[in-house]
Image (tube, one colour):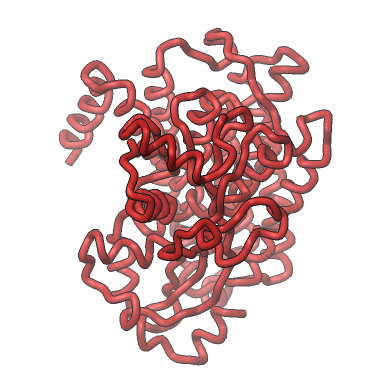
Length: 448
């Protein structure tokens, strides 16, 4: 086993020498989200406390390191630890309020979401740190400022972060700390009866998890060179963090199959999004959406909007379709990942309009928007919270939404149906399900 790990590490260290720049970018995103997922797993997996607000820690870490670099000239290599410390402080506050007053399940989920929203609203209203438009970091290529001309450096940093988080989780699991967390997760009352200080160890798990996540915020900021409040503190990023350790990664069905096979005793829940419905048609997983699960609760939904640059010559969807018909294959669409609801929207539009376009998948909506702003792609299907600031400022222009009705905050942006495309009306949704045959009383507890 040890030799297999060493061999795998050797392969990962040599891969950048043979990979294309695009493939290197994909691996960077895999490592980074693997790091965030492992950091979340310390509190969500080992301690069994479901946080859906971890984006707040990414945001606090990223904004702190960026502001210290811009205003004080402090290198992000130091600022990242200051940001992580502030993220850990925020984690301690959330943890104390939740654990001290016995919040569990959906109530703890709401607490973490509430704090992430408080952070988003606060940052959006502080002009000194960019307000709703966020911060844009000037690229200098200075390694002291966590900036590199060679993208392979980011590959090795992301790999190091993932390995560090994995080593931390491994160390916790093999020590008394991990044993106590497992006992608390399985039966907190019994663990306390045996002398385990549940509050102490859940607090420690929350602090360690938020500290590591805060470190990731600096990487996010200085890899993408931009920070927008709605992206960094929004529910979509929190879900992206959670989806890896719970579901097994974007576009996979392994975690869903495991949840479908789990005992229907109320101890297993699955966080789902649109891919929960899309994946069976693509992966032929050994589960049925309609019969393998019981619905627990609906969490949130967000509109999808097709955007172009604010200076783009395309004023309407018809303008974009006309260009695609005139120049087949030269109009480039992007989204935050393959086999996602955003990707489906592109394919529906492509077929309904009878156009030939080039599709480029990115590892998240934020990277696809950066590609749009850099002129690398023509248009992006995006989740609304990620682009709301740019839409309001005019940096981006919305051409159409996939919602059934117009989005109230985008009154001038029509729906697909209004443009004559009636085959697709959908929002991005988030919810929770449990294995089929879970007793009604257990479902009721989970939904509260």
